Length: 110
Image 1 (cartoon, rainbow, N blue to C red):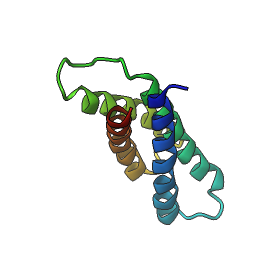
Image 2: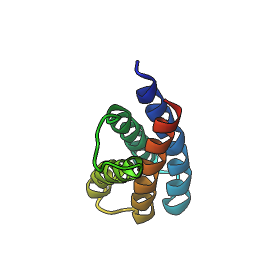
Image 3: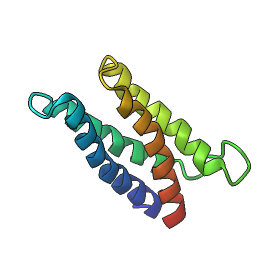
């Protein structure tokens, strides 16, 4: 497996743990297990997508990593926000930020 892809997926899985904690504290852990798992899985998928998008150029500058992460994070986190009927807005904004973090980490360490 490609190093960037591995780093992206692992970073997404790690950040997904923070999503489980944050969302669980806001809406409760009991009775929301499937939703919490879905939040974690969404971050893993985000890491997968960002890991695969290493060659994607959005702008021709050093800011490409940040813009690419922001846009891909926005696309992936919008999916769970829409399908969860907008249950948790803070996780939406966290997902956008996590996209930038995942892309930066994957680019930096691959």
